Amino acid sequence: MANRTVKDARNVHGTNPQYLIEKIIRSRIYDSKYWKEQCFALTAELLVDKAMDIRFVGGVYGGNIKPTPFLCLTLKMLQIQPEKDIVVEFIKNEEFKYVRALGAFYLRLTGSSQDCYKYLEPLYNDNRKLRRQNRMGHYELVHMDEFIDELLREERGCDIILPRIQKRHVLEENNELDPKVSALDDDLDEEMPSDDDENLEE
Image (cartoon, rainbow, N blue to C red; front, side, top):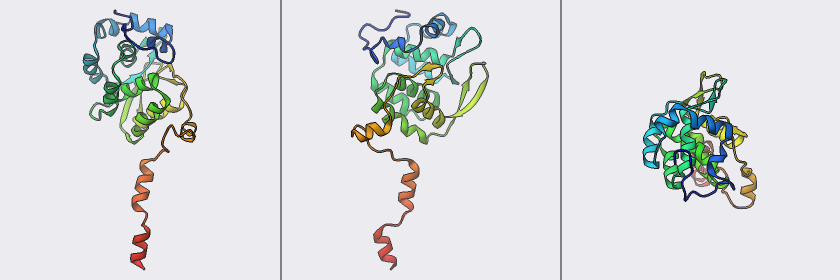
């Protein structure tokens, strides 16, 4: 079971969920100390505790492609395929920002286009700082909203090829997604006087 996907797992985007991570990176994860010592026999419930210990996001680093704990836990989630409501709770977790980032990354890998926009776009309002380890092994700062924007717009995230998702405007035109409303729009609506207010002033 150590490196196998759970028996009743569903295919994701037409493939074994673990295969969403390229083979060479997957093999490096299987060989890593963190995977062998921290990810063995993890269940969805125990994985939450491990996620709370994460201190940075990132993919792989160094010349010999070492995986970060963040990426190891992503593969473990792909392996055990937690229920969607657990993943959503990760994303809604406001106390532990790296738990939120992990849930968002996992959903981006496995979710439908609609779910990616539905659950990730609200995180544009989260401006907290995240530490990210780059390919050189150095740490850099990125804000949560930047991280989310990369997941929704870029072809790669944390050194992993992201599955293609439909453009937002296409989903809107097909009535599969409500038009986007930003927090700024909400603020402007509150500041704009209504017709009734204007009539009162007259």
